[in-house]
Length: 171
Ligand code: CMP
Image (cartoon, rainbow, N blue to C red; front, side, top):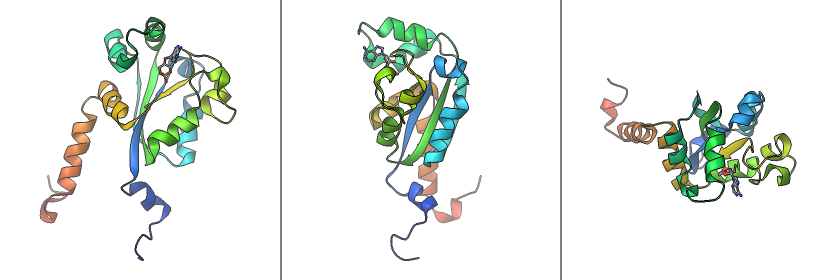
């Protein structure tokens, strides 16, 4: 294969491939929007690495939203995110953090442009359908709240893939 000649699958595996985390909020789950939202990311080309339906405990919600602690909307946000089941997922693909944020649209769903997930599916500010990590650092913090051990598992998989060829794939 010519240098740089990757197929479209190979592109996602290139070094610029990135992970991000999304949370479908209780409004999305109760309104039956799980399939619609996940399907948009799949159609765009993202790979779903982890997917989980959970109900957050208050302490988990406070950890997850810790950067917002002390803001006037913090209590409403914690009450809302713990009010019913959520769906959390880890997505992988090229430029995932920024591309997913573009797809979800602005925080206030009433002002989010048509074509974005919030713009097409919501009207709320607290109940705004979906959350997505806003940076790689946020992803690393958030993923450990919702998928404890994810980063350790990834790092040990990466280091064994880099190990001696004769050890690869052996138990
Ligand atoms: P999210 O992307 O989950 O990140 C923090 C959440 O706080 C945000 O989406 C909104 O749902 C919620 N929120 C409520 N009020 C505000 C506000 N005034 N500004 C920003 N976020 C808010």
